[in-house]
Amino acid sequence: MFAQLLNRLTADKPAQLADVDARLALTGLLVRLAKSDGDYALAEQQRIMSIIQARYGLSGSDAQSLKLQAEELEKEAPDTVRFTRAIKDAVAYEDRIAVVEALWTVALADGERDDEEDSLLRMVVSFLGVSDIDSNLARQRIST
Image (cartoon, rainbow, N blue to C red; front, top):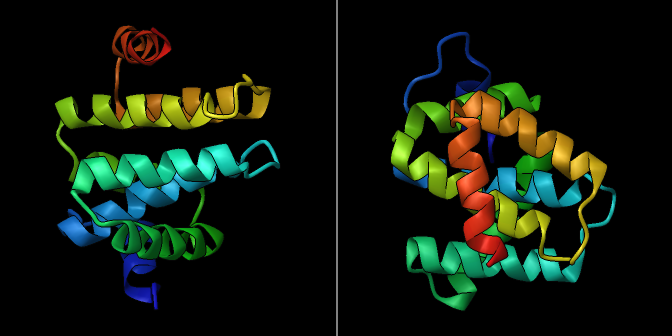
C-alpha cells in the first residue's frame, strides 16, 4: 500500500511529495514521535487526531483513517532522516515551523518531557532546517 511513497522517501533525491503523501508523511512523523518513548499514550493519539483535523480540515472519521494509515506507514518507514527530508522538501519553511509546533504539542500531550522524545525532536528540527530560535518559540507558544 505504501510502496510508492516509501520508494519516494528512500530515493537518493526524493521528488516533492503530493499533498496527500505529505499529509501522510507528516502524520507518520507525529506518530513516530509519540511512539519514541515506548508509550503511545491515548493523550498523544488524541492530540494527533486534533492536529490533523485542524490542519487538514478533516472529519473525525477521515482523520482516524489518516492516523491509521500513518501508523502503518510509520512501521514501514525508513529512518527518520529520510522521512524528515521528504517533509522538508514538501513543506515551506513557515509551515515547517507549524510542523515543529505540532510535534511539540504531541511530545507534551502526556504531560511528561521524555529524553527519547526530546532527542528525536531536536534531530527532526535540525533535519527540517528550522532554526533553534523558531523551534523554541514554537514550544513556548504551546506551553503558554
